[in-house]
Length: 246
Image 1 (spheres, helix red, strand yellow):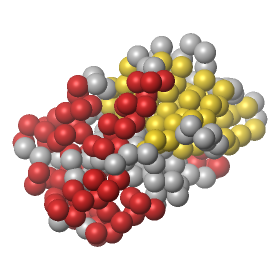
Image 2 (image 1 turned 90 degrees about the vertical axis):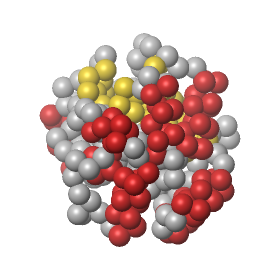
Image 3 (image 1 turned 45 degrees about the horizontal axis):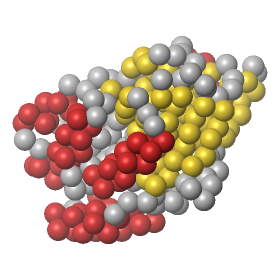
Image 4 (image 1 turned 60 degrees about the vertical axis):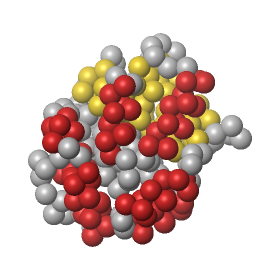
């Protein structure tokens, strides 16, 4: 089975469409999403509808939780908080209910599981070696897919050592990493708001039969998304940062 693994789409329809089109060329069977479907971007309802059309299995992210009103964005920065309230104002009640119904990870998928932040907490950032080691200790399945940091990376437990792999993309925007190790933590990067200095949408395809992770970066209609954000009155900083990949 080939799984298209998405995360942190953040209401960026253009980035999502470009990612799906590229994934279709590579070939996939099923769509998975590590949360943060909405927030920041200009097309929350449209992105939700597109994922529903793809029959994506999706866990809840922290932006999904606050955007539907299950929680308040108390700890969000000013720009993110403004985007949350704007998103709430744009989503009809039925859409907010759909967000509220998203399951809290971990969600089991074959020999893997989906979470948003860390295995224990959807708000927790999994960044350092210590973060990875702590999560690998409590991970039950072989592979844990997670998001939240907006950066593509693989942490692998090899007996008593921890290895770290970052995709090195070729001229076609793809990179392949073989799955090795007792347990792995895998972040596909962000579709709608990358933060690794590369503005292109980031996602991966996991081949559960061959044990390979195929990472992809794909350009999208960035200016269209930015223009939508400005027209909607979303904070200028959020539109500007898309072009920086930060």
